[in-house]
Image (tube, rainbow, N blue to C red; front, side):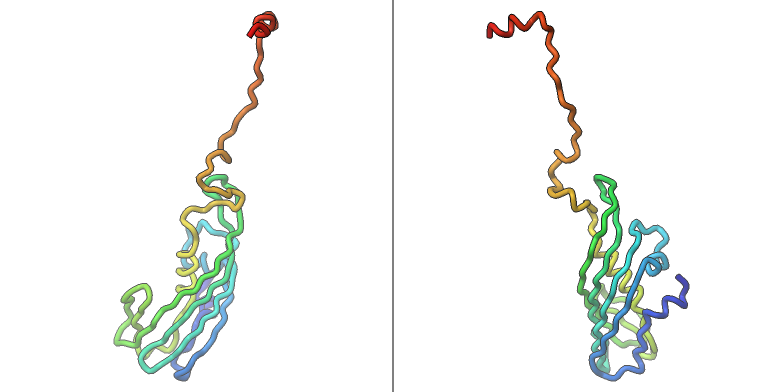
Length: 168
């Protein structure tokens, strides 16, 4: 995905009035390939609704992300579709230079004309993926019986010993 295609995630903040604004972005695998070439996730798609409240000193931005991606189970190596629903919030405070103060607060240059939401959508989606990726068919993750293979044992006895076994 080129930077040109990344522009669809831009919000022009200077032209917005001091009020609440809503935006909707659709994303797919191209967004994830742009930010990282070593993704373990494939076939990703979803929607992000952004609710932005602008004031003179800051932007209060709420992200509502609904999406799905294909993951590979850590135990069975089966591919499965993982659905994700997430709500995140960031405060963009106007200041002299760009810097990230914490996970929830970012200072941006007050002369900045637009903010790209693609990076934030990518990060929020990646952070919501489970560390332990288990296929839905694995109901109890501590149940090791699902993964132990057993063979049926047949009791082969010497036919000459059958009369002795009857004496028991």
